[in-house]
Length: 431
Length: 200
Figure (cartoon, each protein chain N blue to C red):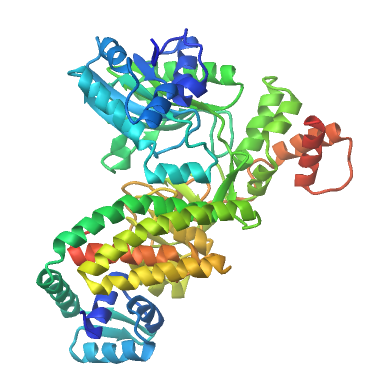
């Protein structure tokens, strides 16, 4: 096939041709892990589409041949560089004819040109002519029956870097039900009791993926009628204290050497190492996305007016479905902000950062009555009842060891700040 | 043309409880004029003042009067289809505006998200260039809106001014200050919802 590839362990092209997401699926195939049947339309076909304003000759015939045997599919974008949320994803596409497949692929290709996607590329230095691949994949259903579900699983805890599996699972639902607030996820660990075979399969997958990438990874998964399927894998992405801890421990486990561990920690990670955090032993009541780092403790106010009123008697955490201009006074009065909806680029997130206040967004449906004492962590997105212990760093000991290696590499053991010690080691290693 | 009393009444519906400074910025009226309108509205039982915080808010009847007068204005100008079309255009632009504000506040370096300390002029220029491009498209929506209902013209002016202040070196005027582009944009969002009677 000229413009497409059937996804399998045999695909040899790089992420530049098949996109990062499809390349991850090829890796999963090579690791012998279960991936729903899929084919990918290459970035080359997208570039032809962008250049000529139509799909390249021959692609339609290839699509018509490839869809035999597929009934219901997802059609997703997947560029060589991740552009989360910028392009179209179409779920539940019933492939009744080649025409349906063609228009779905065209729709994803066209979304490359949307002004928002264009802005994103400008901001992130991504060439406009790169193009995206399109993955057409057999759908698996997390809402199929009581032995179905979906989730995200990390090989290590992204909040601390601790070597324990971490993530969310949604029983009997699809992933998009979390976003819409129709269903609440459970901590990943809950799978162990409810679906022991899926749990074991998932642990095996995480450990194989980690061994392949020699780094912490996470996967998106769905299981249908007790059968596990992996939909995406991605290495790395940990920041701050978690990045320090993972790099240090991987070196101590012998997975990477000390030099590589040093190179994996950017001096920028050190800026975040000492951001105050809720101590790891606390019980998390709700979890969303951290939108502005820092810890805030206060009594819950559920309206802006209440926040202003209550702030006279002590710190307040403003809890809103989402925020609007009505909330500005409340946001100004509050010490921390929680929203049920929205992401790191929402009104609440932008205002929280403007005001320098810890914020957690996209928590989903949350039941908190006014006056309840809560503590929020704007790094991890955790909401904890009461006033848990707060730590200034979750990786102090690891950082100490890592910087000791740094001094050995640079040969400089004088008193300097941490960023300089790391930079000196990087300078030697990059020579 | 909406009278100043309606502008003030409507502003309280759009921004909630507020003081004179904010209402003046939103309506484009001077603070003494805003206060004068508020006093008349209070006599009519439509607004009330919180003496402790020095802020004004709508009463129940004030909210009902706001709904009726804004709906009447929309229908008597036969502006509903045009406002709905402009709102559709707004919703396409909204996520991009939030992306741009976020990029102005934080950036990714070596895969790490850090605060944008505005120490890298080339990065700031890149964001501002995209902002200018965005503003061109936002202006189209604002122009359509003010053609349908003149009171919307205020947003185009406020947005353009915020961008201009940023270009002149006041870096908080894009996403961070209470008069920033982001704040004005969010007020426009709320105004469209309120005007069309769409719940959040």
